[in-house]
Length: 209
Image 1 (spheres, one colour):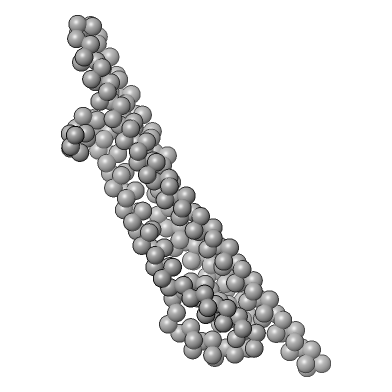
Image 2 (cartoon, rainbow, N blue to C red; image 1 turned 60 degrees about the horizontal axis):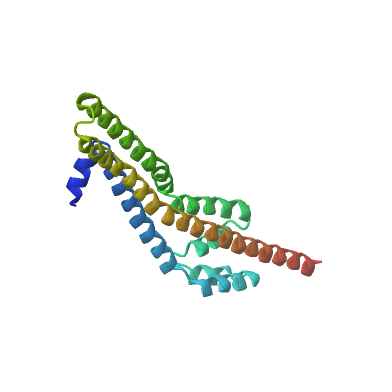
């Protein structure tokens, strides 16, 4: 059965469901490309090296090594280092919030589609069943095939709505898991940098005394 024929048989509710499916597919592809880009820019070795250099207070060396790095964790650490004389923690918190906004972009669209598409499907089915009962009221049971075929067509929207929601919920949960892991890693390295910096300050004060 061709796509156009399925849409036609499903009734007018199939058109918004089709639009929802396009939105879901677009967001999934965009988010996959985003996370591929994030993973491509990761430099785990440099992250640990920054902490070692920060422990020695070698700030200029850190700036040289990270000049063209696009790793979001390293950018978080650099933000903290740049504002180390003012409020390192607040600066890194603001940078982390900005990164999380990028990671959560379009996620509400997937969340909405997961909820809305099954409801749209049920709505389309209800409309189809109402149409079938109208036929039954007009023709009686002289031709039951008209009624059963009408109900079968009406169920197309429910199947479509559920299908879209199922397709959307798997990547939605995956992306949320990636975001949770990213939050954990950002917190880990931000805390490590603060500990290293505070330890250095304490050592400097001890040496002065």
